[in-house]
Image 1: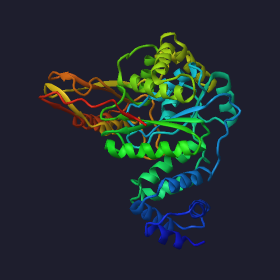
Image 2 (image 1 turned 90 degrees about the horizontal axis):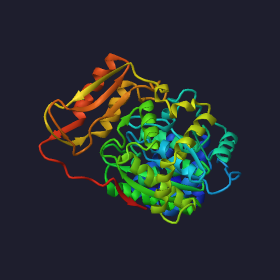
Image 3 (image 1 turned 90 degrees about the vertical axis):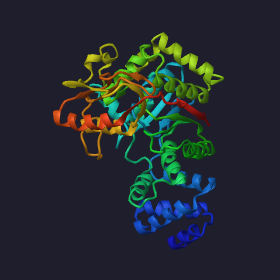
Length: 434
């Protein structure tokens, strides 16, 4: 078998066999296929696409290119959740302990933030002492004992995907539906869960902004998961403004704890977290429909069992569990400042990605994987889309430690929030469940 023949075949729009896809993935992963040939094939895929069988084969080979986690020692249907990335997207810290408190084991391997989006692992590391590097045996022990574990991805999880993504990033082939879907799902298939709920974001804070394109991606990923034996559902959710009020690691942990304490009862963050969690309970066989699942989660907030489960997870992973009762134990910035409205009117637009980038300028995120993160800094939004604000009204509050970084972020935040004379039309919080 020759790589040039595989490239030629896909260039002409023909279907690749499972053997040909395996030859490519394994050869690229072990270095026997050079970058220039891999680039040629991915560009051919960009133009000609992959059908469902090709996409499933590609995903499976990428998942098999490294370690596949085995959680079969844990009783019950193990559930996971994945978000395609957003701003103030703190749902994992809310839904994971709630779902576990309702009897479904949660096993989650999460990533770090990069660019304008936050990462669950960075958020958890803002809790003093919290350890995100767990072995598989430690995860199994924790889930068996307390019902959940959230840890960083291992270095050997779908290594072919890491190599291919790095190449796609510099060859203008990132925005290919089958390549995006296989990239996401290869890591989730290798992560060992029995069921998966996908939170697929749309809007100006998402990597993919158009609901139609997002719907196509969601359907491809759900098809991959179900055909691979992982029960999968997807929700298409709005990211045309930060999901929660807090943007920044310790600030987001604080907000998640407050939700688990019963605060922010009408917030978008709480509503999306409960809807995702209800779908997780459904897939885990703990409820007959999402309405019952949501009621179970709301009860776990009311009776405090969700918050107690978060405290147990924090303690099990070396963190200071007192933070759930004493939020002052979380890192706090030295300074705060308000960004105020230059004119009165309605909040008509929030450039969500810019808000995320502004938090990154303060030190809450990283532009490169090697960058250090300041867990204390960030932005708290004091307005939502459609809110009426007066001249001088507070739009957001900036938490910062370095003055030069504040000035850089201040202008970005001023530019990211638009005020108009008319109230904007509303958009759905959840567009569709697939």
